[in-house]
Amino acid sequence: MTLTPLQSAVDVLDRAGSLLLAADAVPDPLVADDMRRFALAQGVAALDTYLHWAIADVPLKNMASALKSLDVPFEELISLSEAVVANRDKIRPKVRARGALERVILTMTFQSSRGVEQAMAFLGIRKAFAKISPHMVPAHKPSDVKERLNRIVHRRNQIVHEGDLQRQSRPQSIKREPADKVKIGADLAWLRMLVLAVDAATP
Image (cartoon, rainbow, N blue to C red):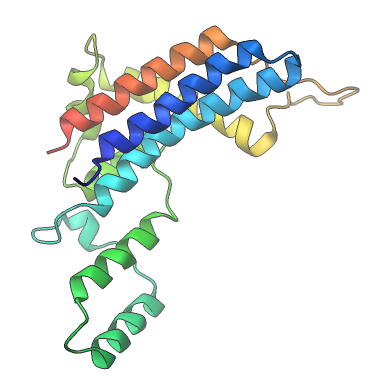
């Protein structure tokens, strides 16, 4: 049986949780903190994973207008046309088209609130957070969901793109943002709830 987007995202979240727990047993505090940082980054990746898988599986009939207008590199069209001509009896154009879709969306990230809205539009869902927020437990305001998600993604970007170093006007020594395991654990739990809410809001 084919794996669902939710199963793939839960696997990523489970591994993020395991990484966070394992950090407590690491004697080197710098390494332990980096494990906690990576756990948060992986938790954010679970949301991205869910949306990538969901879009890749979208039915090609009656596609949402946002997906119909997705830019596809010209070389993908050339490759598809050449394959059809060379293998008229064997090629399945829709399979090739889906492969092109997967390659294009893998260049996109669906992590911030804007990214989630874009991904949900590809799935035919407008006003995404109005549909997602009632499935949070307890129910959240759409604006609160977006605000917390953006805060977590900003933190993830600090880790992934800047090594979680503190910005200083005239640095004299290396200082890092604290990797608080309680806060990271709370964010991972919230991301799990968000992924479940996205799944509930997705037809």
